[in-house]
Length: 311
Image 1 (cartoon, helix red, strand yellow):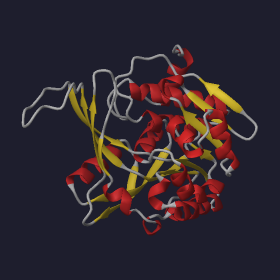
Image 2 (cartoon, one colour; image 1 turned 90 degrees about the vertical axis):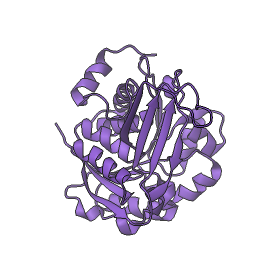
Image 3 (cartoon, rainbow, N blue to C red; image 1 turned 180 degrees about the horizontal axis):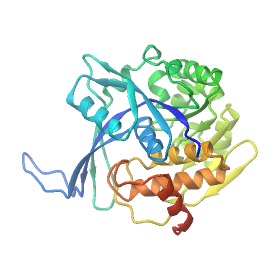
């Protein structure tokens, strides 16, 4: 089996989930919840974690602060076997963190602190230090900015690596313009449906994805929540339904889809097969709290994909 060497670059976050939050207590009152759990997350951190679970060799590249949040985030990534030696620790800035109260119906509003993710620059990133680098996944190009993101991905391509991009912020035309320099060097763009429509102003998801392909992206693989995924290239449009599950917490499902999709590509699957593996990985994450819950691996995710019903 091929083990892909991946640099997961960009947004690394520590998520704290509080499960079954019915309301915010008044004044200084308290309330009981079912679960409080911390997990590594982010468009680089969460995706890298799931990729490692699926058999890739992941090297995290990003920034955290000199604080207990950073200690915890590094420990959670390290426990998965991820190489964290290229995560820099910056003074005078806290580690990026989110607090996510998950409501009984599955809604998940969040409080978020950008922290060290906003301080990451190209000076902190050394792709040349990773031997046998096969793929560079950039999570959150908006934090680096388009010219820097483009430079990073062009460097990756010059080393023979394939590339992917996942955007964290909501989609709008100004953000699209801000990150547009990276598209000519992006093999796989991994947005959600709201981002695609917001970026392009299209009312059809297929038309929006095609507009992004026209900007230079090789392939756009769009998540659609419970509907599944849409994969669009210059030559193909592929619809893949999601798996029928009872979700517990959908935080990180987009990152899990990205990981499954990219791992599928590395294993030689076609675009449909890769998207099916992505949907199966997302289903594993949705059935627990955090991307690292349970003990799923590539074998169990593939077995799930082969037998589970679809929506």
